[in-house]
Image 1 (cartoon, rainbow, N blue to C red):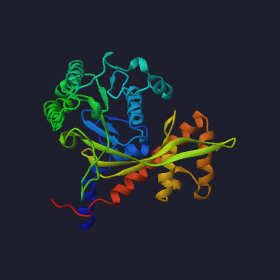
Image 2 (cartoon, helix red, strand yellow):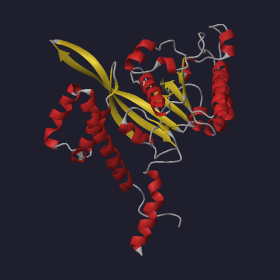
Image 3 (cartoon, rainbow, N blue to C red):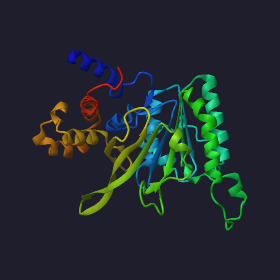
Length: 338
């Protein structure tokens, strides 16, 4: 009897750890992060990436578009640079196919009202043609509103207009996004929560609407700067990032993933996978002898593309399997409702 009950519980709970066929995902470019997300960024949902400077926010958005183009050849990717800081040549060098990306008009989006009209047109076209799409706004914080643009810079304001406009935007748009195959990826800058005595020490601008309507809230933290020395010259070559899911309606929340971002390259997927397997003591699942892991990690940068891809696929399969086993072990041992 007990065994049968446990089998039924495991069958019911498997949804939380299995792949979800009711969603279509866009890979983040990092297998470990995809596991934390529940498969990647889901189409038909709103995703918020929040972080301080040098936390690879734009880079993650760039990799999301690259993987979207690879996964959905008939799809339409759109990128809106509101910070006047996006370098198309740099993104192209990372592998972004510029000719396939809709960068909008020559006049950049400056207000929430402009963003609302632009995204509404993009969404309407995707629904009308039944084609998948990804729309990245980088960043939400750089958007003003019409009233603020007309107001003198020294005039006092309570600063609530933008939050109200975004609240209206998400109320009007959230259900239409869900009924489409469009991923709205919103990049946000982190802000200090001044005067906070408890709770979150950091926040992002734009009010609380995105907290409620977003399906995933991914917060990024800069752990350390990676440096190496070549010919007696030391230079930073990347950053170690910790990503935490503060909200996830697609998977179990509050999961974390650490990964390296290398300048001019992107997320170092294989290294992130091996480091995590090492942390949980499951290196052998990827065919790696624990006593040789240091040499293996040192040799990653020397691998050619064919060897790297082969090793990455093996490590990715191991990470997915081990992640599932770990998550399963944390699920409830009994069901609350029969």
